[in-house]
Length: 292
Image (cartoon, rainbow, N blue to C red):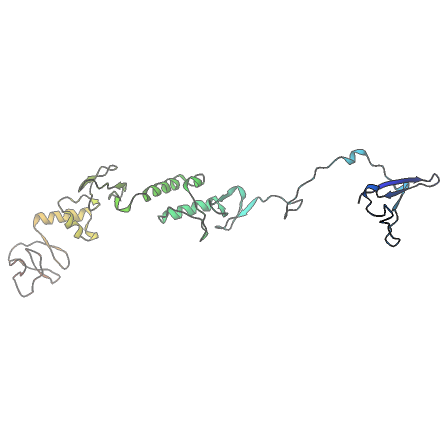
């Protein structure tokens, strides 16, 4: 409540000053008129303060300069220091704040090394849409956002994988030569059989998507087992075809007839026709399929 000094009394024979305080008339709300007189029971006398001059200490005027107020926030004490480190949720190691990497679309942060390893592992699994490591989180990662922390080869591999994902699987394939493996696209404008890789300049079969199988038709090649499609196997097949060798229908070994009839008995015990390769009765030297 605002007050005013009513009077100061100083006795010459005493080292004391008496200060009497009073409420300014403008702020008095009751007792100002006869109609709102104050009763004896509620009356409070004017307070007096007596100061002993022997206890007064002189204070320099410079001590009353205005101090700058300091702002504090909830949960922070006046002597608290800013955080200089954080705990990575992947490796669980304490890392400096400068090493943190924020995931787009969420509040999760990890150290740069863990994010780099995480991206490389997802690309190794042929995953190009890489999200936050936390299951169910909507956060995501993009190549440009991660460019500064990714090794060059990982960044380039991610970009290539995204480009490949835009092409339909039926329209793309790779050069069949392992040392090349260039990405090729079939535009479907022509029915091409023999084609040349634009990278290694070697011939391959476009329908079969394998190295060029000279002397063997595509339908014959596709009937072969996977362990019979190597370049050496194809050369052997061409030699057998030129030499009129025939394969046993059971053990698939090549057999050459030197003399006699068309009835052949393989070392595995299988009897077959040397003319058409059909199985025959062990005791019958006549092929019911080709009539020989």
